Length: 180
Image (tube, rainbow, N blue to C red; front, side):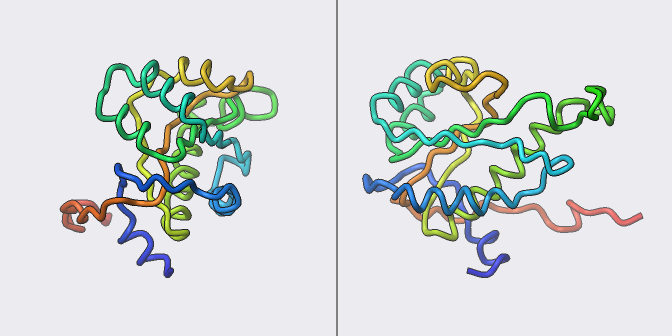
């Protein structure tokens, strides 16, 4: 798939077929996502793939802050990818000081770049996914046994799409760009 076609045809998928995603396919998606840029090439993004239905249900029930829509998406997805980041590396100098006024917020930027790259690679492999942002990151970390020194950045429900949503309306280019 050509790059622009991949960008223009990727959609947030919220309904999935029951078919499991082969672990080798997930590994290929992660391998592609590893090419996302990061602060000084720190590569702080990590992925925990939850395939266990009981654990997914527990995350859906206990960590979605009562947001029913996300509960249904998580329970309906064959895989839930917990995107995490190694805390305290992006945005820092070797002596531990911040490099810029963005301080440690670069780690979220890096995780976002990696998550988008992950989503595009998944689409290229015939998978659908949606990035979920409403969740209790501490509860998710507890439930998956997240390694110390990492923080949860996002949840990504993933599987084979059981829907084909139309592209939402986009803003005009002239509303998005300014030349000075």
